[in-house]
Image (cartoon, rainbow, N blue to C red; front, side):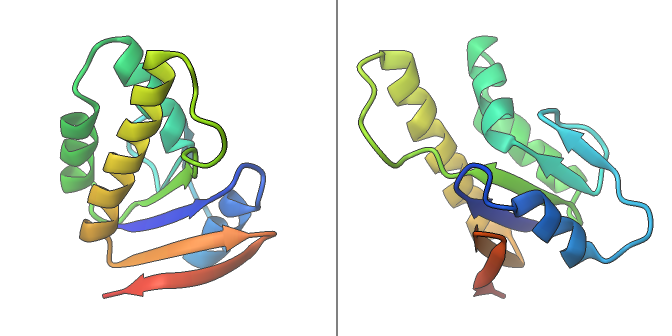
Length: 122
């Protein structure tokens, strides 16, 4: 599994597609389903939390079943701390999940302005 992180609209999806360099790539946008790329992990976390499901376990189980996928997530922890408790919990949960994924990932990439930097290469 590889993890690609970066700010919103920084070219993470195009970077991941180029990274895989395969002719036919399946992208799942905002859903945990069988695909080469899982895009918008932060939306998956929000949906799981809204449904009061265990986001950490569900994402961990998915990664165990799909060890060759690329997961893309926006960095959501910067900026002002939200007043709303759910929003604070959501940001914390995305951070925790990304930390867990980074530990398991063979490589972690950070993308800014479409330019990726490998920040972990195991």
